[in-house]
Length: 112
Image (cartoon, rainbow, N blue to C red; front, side, top):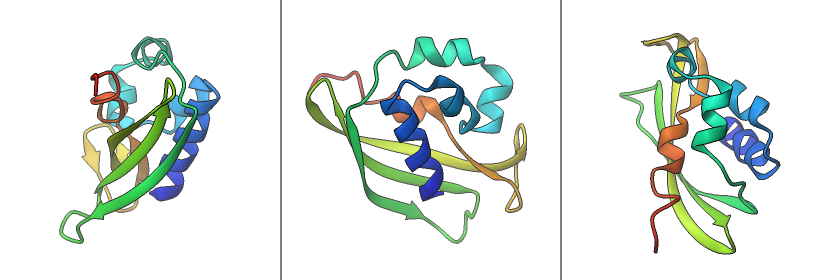
């Protein structure tokens, strides 16, 4: 899961929307296009750091990762939700971790 968010953030820092879309949650991708992702995340980040990982063994297909990103020269703390799915609307321990893009940007554009 940490590797997934690292790759997502590295792609975000390069405006690599193809990679970001590929690393997004299966359910989110089933309802949204890469073009929509480009409209949703319009600016790249200049860097990131993983602060902590909130993973509960009772919910093995859900993980929240607390991040610090540098955006427009300022540090912002964000929470990325990752969900492990094998098909849309179906969590599975045998599935693939995917980033929910909405969770990542939820606090990005809020003035601090």
